[in-house]
Image (cartoon, rainbow, N blue to C red; front, top):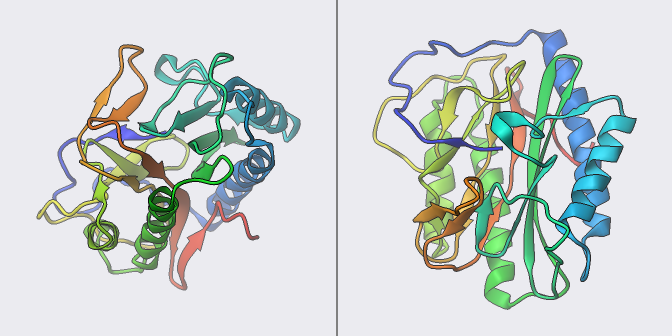
Length: 265
């Protein structure tokens, strides 16, 4: 789940919670539950499946793995998953009425609470074959996440992540959402620092070992502008063009980025 952009961190690492090695191991367990859930959901995405079906499957697996869905009830959100289709950017509410159609894309954002720590990750998937430009949107968005993760190096700043994501996205002809950003994560779902997917020109926090960051580019095919629907949650693109979203929770270590939510472990 995403936080709304506010004033940027303007310098040091104030309010950033540094995790111990043992805490990072717990966060890896939490994030591997998320990774397993997303891998399972990938196999279920198909024409005719409802977003409620996906939500129920994720919640059931999460509980079976002795974790708690992180989003359900968070600030009143009604679902375990955020499931956003086509022009929906983030925070789509699961529904029995929303059935996937051929050519759709669906963004699935899932978080869990496990032994006091949170995991958070997101993917965007095609439903069958999609248009060439939509398929490229998905590729570029996932690549931009990888570019951001590459900047998770001790001594870099949060803004180095932002710059890398923005450069790749805009260089590919797409736009990055500015109203919603990534975030720190740990014993709270949303911690400092905020991680914009664009450079704001301000001095941001240095990356130090023990920080854990939920990096999540949201990339639009058209304008970067978005709006929130009357349900108070679902965010859509202002021009109704498609949007994609990928996310990983990443620990800062002396050896480089450790992707806690990797689906390849």
